[in-house]
Length: 131
Image 1 (cartoon, rainbow, N blue to C red):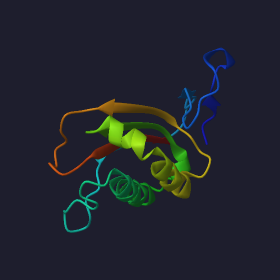
Image 2: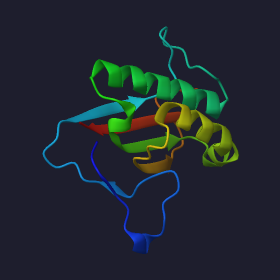
Image 3: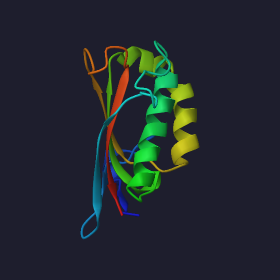
């Protein structure tokens, strides 16, 4: 696993790392994943925590296919259509996150957007893995 970089002068990060050193390693770049199920329908309509869980399930499936672990992810970019809903459900989202990642916290960015490709999608996650 690539080492995390968390400078002490920036304060202790909570739920993310500031950066990762990934020199000389294999990288896998993930397209944006949403809460689509195998039939192409969004799971958890109007439920951001349920959509977050399905999205992580989909990321995990892609990671397995790419022969990397979720703990190899060094960067996550989360696009959400409702930042306040994400904050309101942060405890549920955090519990789901820990089921998939344990105590591994990549560099992360949360971006509020007005809409995603699938009209019912509330969250889309891009990722980069280093192995």
